[in-house]
Image 1 (tube, rainbow, N blue to C red):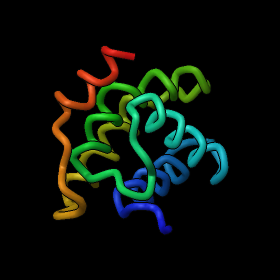
Image 2 (image 1 turned 30 degrees about the horizontal axis):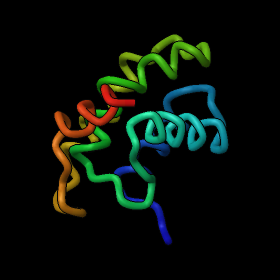
Image 3 (image 1 turned 90 degrees about the vertical axis):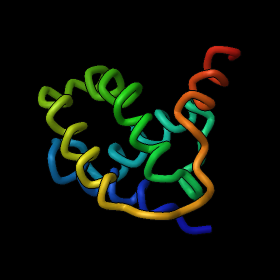
Length: 101
């Protein structure tokens, strides 16, 4: 199954805006999604926005990305342009599930 539009956009921005190569960028995003209990193939723009806001900055710091906050803002702006997608799970539901882990 193909990855979602929001996953692809996030990876493209991360590759373009950092020193991470394609594999590193995709792996970083997949790890953040895994922490949130989400899958790349069906993550919505709203869900990805929450991951970018709450989890990705730490993952980028761990990888030595210096401009991580600016990159996350750029990704969030792109995600706001994506409409529709799978039925959205609220950010609150995602983090409630994380709290039970």
